[in-house]
Image (tube, rainbow, N blue to C red; front, side, top):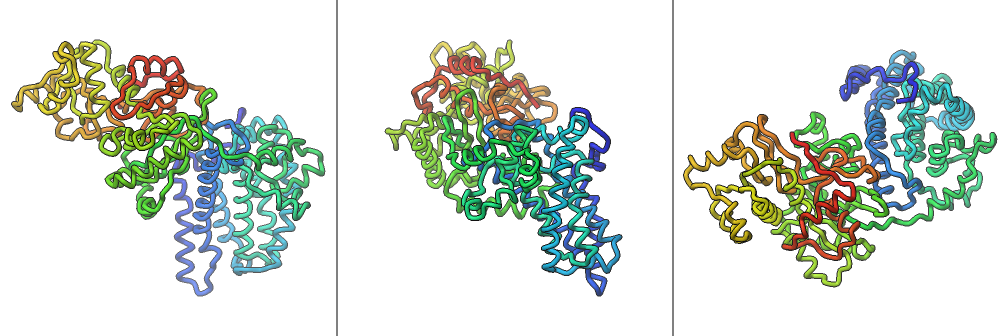
Length: 626
């Protein structure tokens, strides 16, 4: 929102939310009806809706590509990260497509048939469109843009756009409604002129709008990719086509580089930024960034691919909940395709880049879903390859997230250390900090609780830590009890309790304990035995399925990240904003403290030491329950 919002700031359909697309539904249905019923079919009218969908796909490709390239660092222009407030502000990037579609439909409906029924191709119309854009449109836009930077208009309208100093492709269309009216009026000059001179064609309309979308996205993508050879071959191109770095300077300097797509008018009126050429050359030469810490994770549910930072920005900025949205049914063919296509992917890919103090943090994703983790050899090969690549790139620490550190899969990561004893990179499973977060999530004054989870490295260490603290831990499974008993000293072992094998005694234990330590395998029938108000605290990487509405479910082991951790604008799986899993945080702590050890296999660091180190570096306990 602008600092002093003016009239026509909000979009007319703002209150409709995601249902704003219904505005176009009657027109789309009408276009299909006319095309099937009338003898003289209007192809242009029919193609409006498919073209709008194509524009949305075009923009989404730019979003994903930009986020991927800026995460890698190759040719990145501005290093500063973006935050959730920018993602929220730019969530309505598709409003301008709805607006344009509505105007196109109205135009085709009310303009006489002799004008609106345009052919597929006309060369003279395309030439006229190019000339009109290069002259009147670019010239008028330059002066409109300068006017929008006057204090009166800037604080009421254009400051909303400039709130994004570090731009993404969709930043290009984030303007108040009034600005979009002005821009469409300018861009309508070639469209209406060719229409009324009877030189318009479907190709000229589609091509011109696609050109505007392409150049807008390119100018705000924050990575330079226009090769210098183009300007060497044709030097005048410097004045006819801007580059991403050229427009990026407008967002960092504000009072330079006002042109739309052609820098010509900036050169004519002396508003070209003096650093334009230097920033362009520097960005082109910039190499891929090396990380200090890599978090190696993977895809979870089939629709989790859309919740990646590289996927849909609006979804990535919210916790990934198990309940599907209504629109997920419309894209299920694409979802299924993504699951099957991952079988052919053989390399991890970077999805996120963060900085914390002097550390560079990357998140790498294995292109595999949970349902594919039964193929142990294939998965281990991918993880091993990622660790070796990280070692080659000089990474200090690799943390294994989710099932990548499964004991059944690779012995909590120990397999890779045995196979490659020469590794310089440290492999961390983060179990110590996970134990610390669980222990510190236990409400003060607790004297006893129930353990109902799968026995794992974290489970063993957590139960041992609680028994040493004098908290009584009950279990209803004899086999679990005997295995846990072997890990405890005689004195602490007295705090481990096995309930009687009778159903009555077990149900009594379920009901008496208001705090349960649980894994993701907690069954529905067990949850139903808990008394009202029971607090379920997960000790697993994956959360249990929520069944009870009268109970509380703690978030899986995680911590709130410090405000100085930069470029955090997506949620880690089901975790809230600016919250990281304890396993991921552990790798950052290892790198900050310079600990020279592999925390994998059965190795558990000093839990209290790890906990205090995380607090000292600004990470905070998480107390969120649902």
